[in-house]
Image 1 (cartoon, helix red, strand yellow):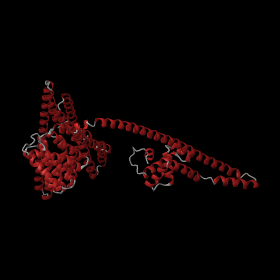
Image 2: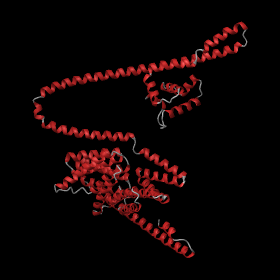
Image 3: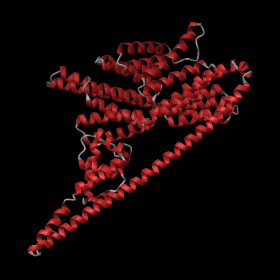
Image 4: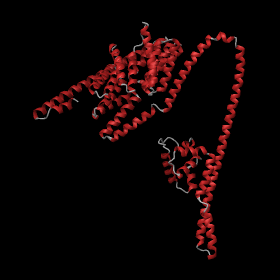
Length: 566
């Protein structure tokens, strides 16, 4: 940017060209010194981390008490969390195993929280959700308010990541209520050190809802607390979000100052994951400013760091920027390569199955919460129910009988279903046999007709007319009639399929409907070719066109299975 401004305001002359060259040299020397300083700083921090890791491992090998071991494992997990998420996750899981063995529910809840935090960064949301629901359950049962606060906050983070913003706000405000209540009664929960992070997350939700004013209000609340506590981690996160917000409002100078402040805060604590995020936010900033070369530089840094840290979300976002920027610059080969990486990482992250599993787990948690309340009510009413024990016994017997009757009915229904499926299979086989017979008959008629036509030229005058009549009679039995007879039989067996196919795909031609019917009978391309007098290549082309008409874009979807499910 400095060089661009220089070109703009200083027209060239001999003296000015010399001055310009001198300025460039000084500028490049400053950049080189700055880069060298940053490199040495990063190496120094990494060396300090390694010394701390070695020290913690020595302490761990010399300790026998389980509680102390778990705390050391937590420390190791935290240190590795800045550079190697896989190792961080491994130590957190070891802490959980040891906490369960020691029957220490507080440490067990904290282990689940630590595992969940690493899993969120890796992008494994379903496993993260399981761990936070486990920690929440333990915290609520034991009134561990801090752990309940952290669990609720991170459950909100997961709902945010899967775009369930209202659910996310519900969790965030539940966590905020815990904090506010402790302040109101004059007993603030001392362990809650990340209220600034909660404000940031609430700001994220309002930003997602495009309520930028409310989002900025919560971000600034969080930033003020983070700066007061010298919390560089949250300063980095919140400034990064404020930078993106200002980019969205086209306040580019303000956005740049926030993004640089975010990067500097993250570099101070060697937060490599955060640094990678700052890099792709700066890449986005320069994309918004129509400066693709600067954007490309930061996107590359983010991609390299994300790959090193094995963070799929960072790789996904940075590869997306690299694809878009290379495409804009006309580097088509690089653009294609990065697009393939983006697609691969995207597919591995969050799919429909994962979202369904997350919803199921959420419903399970709500159900268990209701069951817990019901158990408490049943305990209070236990004395009253003792006098009704005889009645309950009778009811239990009746329920048992009803259960066995219901199971018997279910079994009968299952047997009837299996019988219907068997009957359908037999009808399908009969239908297939029938169509083979009809078409073979048609081929035989065509063959006889062709032979009679050849003989006709050699017949006597008086025999030509009778033979001609036979030919006409044979040709009156056309393939159309054969198909009409098959269609009638097919509809009688698969009436719902036929109606559904025509309703959902009204643009299908008669030939495509015929092909769909054959495929519905699970007939191979070779078998269809042999009875329709078409080549295998023609049928393959027809199958491709049918897939297109049926809107089957995913190559992994089997055409026959698709038709079987209509």
